[in-house]
Length: 498
Ligand code: NAD
Image 1: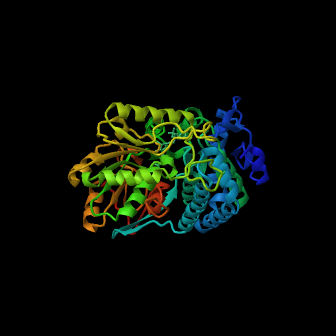
Image 2: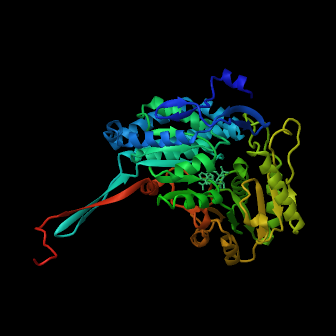
Image 3: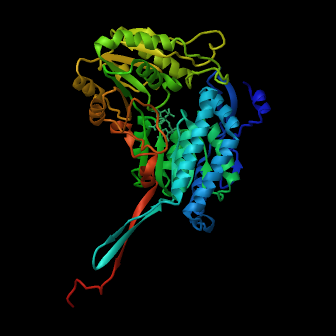
């Protein structure tokens, strides 16, 4: 679909930034082309934020945080604003879905779900807004109570792979807790984030409570992280970005939640429900062309199931409709950029040279009508050994590495032999066995006969997959800081005998 067709759906695109309640053009002179991964055509261009605009955005969030129009709102009031926002998002679902699809190549049937899930995240945190509680300790001669207070200005840095949902969850948790925000979407896929700012405005949030400015990570992102008035950073992105954020935040001792990469192991046991496990692994490995941090990319399977299981997967893979992302029947779209396709092709070639076997995929898709896009098929590689780069690096694409194991201890050990620890998967009908495996996996999230996170489930990584947790009650701790207030109930005794 072209921009003209988009106009027919009334889903017009916003290329402006949003600072202090106003839609403004980015001041950085060199405009950046926003490209549709379906055919690499230009959707529009955006001028990134200048340094001056970063300062303005932070100053407006800082002023808004201290302004009566924000401080006078109760948690319930903030929740009501968030509920209104979720309603507006649902009303505008189709436009958001079309824009996200054009910007990221995620098929429209998926982006419709993503918009609905974003609204669910907002509603979940709206519910929390009036329920943020401290604690009380009776200490005899004194008592102490704690308040969970907002940080003030939170800087959120968003990646390109699920821009709307990740922004919505961070924004709504932050605002529920009384913070204000400066949000930086990825310059590669900023369009739904920029549009989101408009409905935040319509929902009635006071000007300055949310500011959305885009640009590169090393200019605009860095300036946000290093800004002394930004008191917390929420970063979702690659591990290298996370390392840079930690270095950048040293000067101001700004804490950061880091949601980083993964290399999810999938352990299939002998006692599985066959059809369910095949469908499950297919989804874990290839849904959203595995451009999701929690994809399962290393399959561990007993030798006696190996051949049949791999054939069943390959047979199903061949049937997944790949096509133009705006067509309702398409189930797999293109990867985000052309570079990512060539990178995956190289990784698969290297694995082959090292002795692995490519069961299906591994080459750029050149089918009629898709050749201009960044299409790379679901790829299954067998005979992988743990030391191969294909088994170690986060490829962030649909390449499933298959390894066999003779005993479970060995499978768990190899599964844990990774610098990452975000999501892991177990397929087994034996509750004791699967729990034993789950307890031993070094991973922030383990899914037994299941897939996918939701607002209620604390989500985050072990090891180099990150620091902190999003979602659930734990997120409320990430977006607030504890203040202890201690009150003396008996006459104060001086330490000095004078
Ligand atoms: P990325 O790290 O390149 O960029 C993410 C965002 O950070 C972008 O907005 C970018 O401009 C910004 N950025 C990068 N370096 C920065 C710096 N030094 N200072 C400030 N900002 C900086 O990641 P990406 O390629 O956009 O997204 C893919 C990665 O995100 C994958 O590794 C994936 O696993 C990860 N991811 C993790 C989760 C999670 O919840 N754990 C969710 C989605 C994506």
